[in-house]
Image 1 (tube, rainbow, N blue to C red):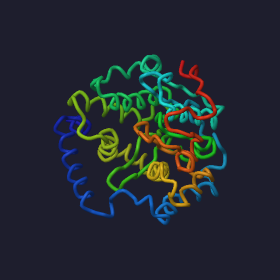
Image 2: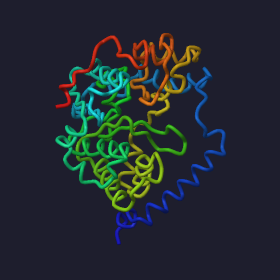
Image 3: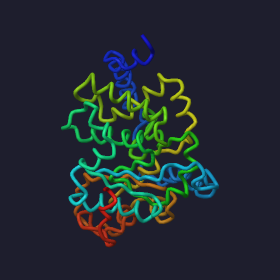
Image 4: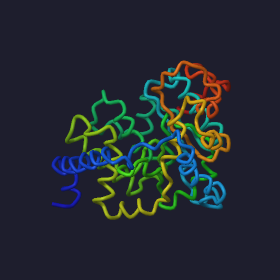
Length: 317
């Protein structure tokens, strides 16, 4: 039996997740591994510092030198006409900063045209998040480009920072927590790379064995499993420039706090963090004036459109 066959068995997956549960339990008991204190200005400064360094010394001097396919993929399964105002504001931010890239605003119907193999994976259709996780790998495996979650707000052109991060023909932000390798709300890849196709194959195998995920972060943890058990993919991941996912999460930490630390507001106004992960689940009803998310997006209220209109829905065709 090959290493891959052992890895992708039901027993192999269960053994990995048992180890992961123990690791998560240890993390819960260790105060040093808990969520950062986003109310502490020094914590914010430390999180933002690598991004300020990157702004001063770009990862690569020649934007576009590695030729990442110029597709940006965003998905709102129910259709973009019904997307919440915050989600539409995120889509506009990608249009605004990346006019030379092709932005694809996909829904469940158009997704099937761009990634036909997506429907071949047996994840339960009722599990919308699981389906979206599979969609991003399917699109990148077939076409390459950039996947951005529908709630990911863009503050910098991709051509300003991404080429230098693509030395392994793949990039995602790393280490949002000491016990998690990565976050998947932003992925960039060339098509048909060993890493993307291997990850997609593992996801396919996983859903052939299980009807529900072991954990909310099942796909991030499957990537960890893949990187640990496939030496070639593990080596590729080791070569990806380490850019912490905590930077893009920093606005989310104090989204509606007018008294948030000054370094957070400064990072937003200076545009030093290329993307910011927001949430469509927020239910805040007050004015956004003077809040981090208001300063970032220009929105006055979370449930009213931002002033610059609606995104161009034709780009998802």
